[in-house]
Image (cartoon, rainbow, N blue to C red; front, side, top):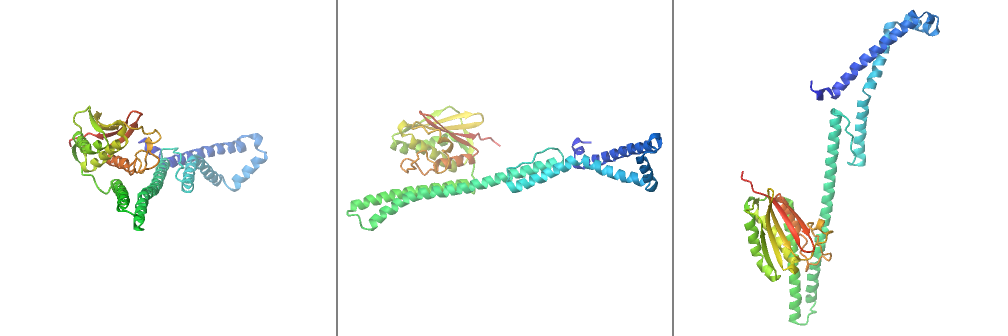
Length: 370
């Protein structure tokens, strides 16, 4: 018989029953022999008080009813002893469930056996762990929603306050000359562009993270794709008095991706490299292979990212510059959008920064013909 069936609760109670019967029978046999010796076989005890009491009980009640009563009592006693561990463990599981219900999902029940009770304890622990994870995820979602609202409110209010201020200044006829009016209108217009850019980035971030829009995947030559994006960035590079260089250490890099989505991820990375790497004068794009993955590196040679900022660099609305200035930084959503898009492609992105250079490195699994 399979050992796992022998250790079930049913068999444990069967063993307890058989052992109780056997132990009770042995006890009765030993008691019967002892009483028989004390009454009939031991001449010294014939006149003893306990001998007269035993004789009276046997003569008036009978040995059979006496043995039956003693057998039932001994059976119940031994059955209680042999099943005590099972009952105590069942009580421990019941107490553990109360603890989980009252004090939260952090409590766990110790798994002591491999029978049904052990499986029950494992299932309860797994259920508690899943519930705790769900509660934590819900709490994180609430915090993320509050953070998103706070970040959006802050970043929308700043340019909107400026626009309203300048328009109010014009509306109250406080401008004396047309040149002054044009100056304030131009500022309001630029602030409106910043506002629109933030709204567009916010829409893009929520769209990417909602998962409502499935990716239309196709076979993509990653090197040609990135080279084309680099060429399209030449006007922006020229404006920043920068150039780009290609460091190609790989052959063909074919992946499965949605070009329409991936273009936004790398546009953000290249724009970020230009914005923060002006002092270095160039952006370097590297291609390589690592195992079964294609590696793309976007590097700038500007100011180093502080080590304390690196763990948060891909969080929405996070900017390494603490002033949150729209002049020195973007909306704070670009890197978060890039990370979300790359991870939807089963890719990985991380950042390394030193006083010499800052590298944004992405990994994608190679395309495999089905």
